[in-house]
Amino acid sequence: MTVTPFRSPYKPEIGHVIIGRVISVNKKSWDVDILAQRYGTLNLTAINLPRGEQRIRNEDDQMQMRLYFKENDLLSGEIQQLNINGTIHIQTRNLKYGKLKNGILIKVNHMLVKKTKHQFIDLIDDIKAILGLNGIIWVYFSTVKVADEYFNDDKTQIDSLNKDEKPDFFSSILIVLFRNIIKSLDEHGIFIVRDNIIKYYNIYMEHFHKGIKKDDKDNFKKISFINKEQEEIIIGLLNEELEKEKAKKEKMRKEKEKIKEKEKENNKMKSKKTNDNFEIDDKELEAD
Image (cartoon, rainbow, N blue to C red; front, side, top):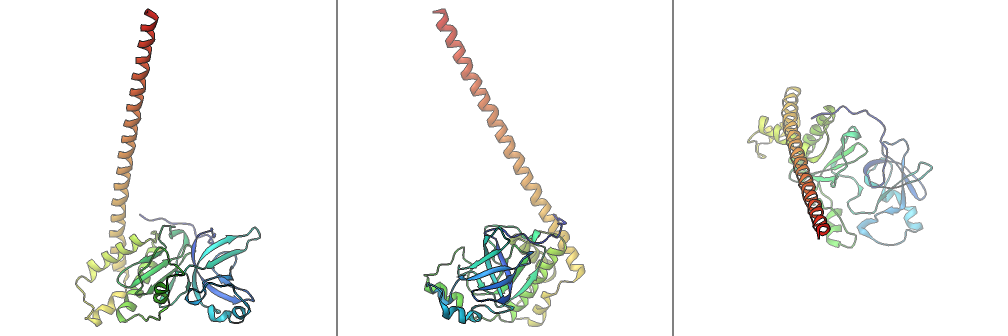
């Protein structure tokens, strides 16, 4: 199942998870390029301080703003507020947001990135991704399991999120592979959601690298490159799988509609029977 969406500029909405690049550092805020018609504004009061510290921001914080974010830093955040004058406010207060590291950035058509319950996803092993609704995706390495919520008062969680990690050889190969998978989905107009990414990965590994082992470094590093012939086969098989799923969902939808119609008809019959009983009772009363 593929679509050919019109590539329009990203239109921010409150609650959207986004990825952006810091363009400039101001007195109390950062300008962030989020691929919208205007830069987003990240205020000093809207960031999560190091180690989850909870306090009012002061002049010292203003003096060391570049320690938090500097020009060209990549960050994840959430659209917090949209003003009438067009200002786009971003927040990174949750521990899952903030400066990005140990990964690779991919730009895609934002209309292919669907809003779901989970924009932060686990892929394979310690490879994870952030699916920015503004069309920027971050594939990265982290041993910390993706959680729906992170809490500022959980010191263990804070320590694990702030620890310095470096991807090993195998993780680096997988990061590049998932980057290429996502680019392929984008080029073929297929929705970029976790299910489709994993389906693509499984088809690729099953047909072209079945049984490959990590201790075979020379062959393992080859998996990151998907050639055009392989891509055509994978996309064909993936589309077949997606069409089957679509047909199955359509069949289930029709079956549910039939059940609803049957229930509706049964309710009508019950209602009619009740009304008929009332008419009989009325006639009996008249006869009396």
